[in-house]
Image: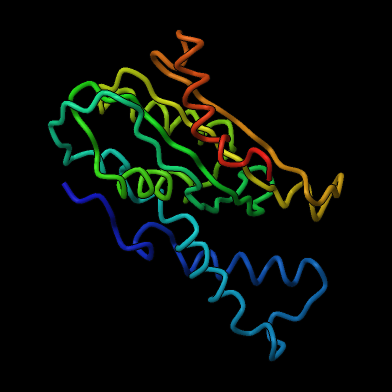
Amino acid sequence: MSTSKSPSRCVDQPRIERAVREILAAVGEDPDREGLVETPARVARMYAELFSGLGQDPRGHLGTVFQEKYDEIVLVRDIAFNSVCEHHLLPFMGRAHVGYLPAGRVLGLSKLARIVETISHRPQVQERMTEEIATLLEENLGAKGVAVVVEATHTCMTIRGVRKPGSLCVTSAMKGVFRSNVSSRAEVMSLIYGHHAGG
């Protein structure tokens, strides 16, 4: 099964273009002004890219696993991502830390980054994104535990509304032993944040 589709097939770009022209007119601009005439097409292409995860099944990235006796934590830290808040259609961006405790099967490290990318490229809220990544790995990898921590800056907080630049939202989802065992949770959190100790 293919894990991706062309972003242009996942959105109705002409419809977006018409909508953007209406928005420009609604805010008092002239959509036919030289500087704006190509803007609707640019926005349509941008949305196709930003929302490309809607046309992908992230489970496809879990198709190839390797049998290994390794039984310690596997963690990929600082996976950069960008997403779009579904409440205001403004971007939020940051880093995801994704770890799991294998139960005889390991996943290629790049696949963890691809899962984050696919799930983030949809209209999202950070809380759901964090939970979706963790649940996907728990249900499909058969790991003893899954830990996902996401840190992000939300432009809906920094450029509008409360206007608090520099604020950071942190969410976590712990599954299996990372939820039930305090020492296991402390170990994975130490691996995520220990490198920041002392600056």
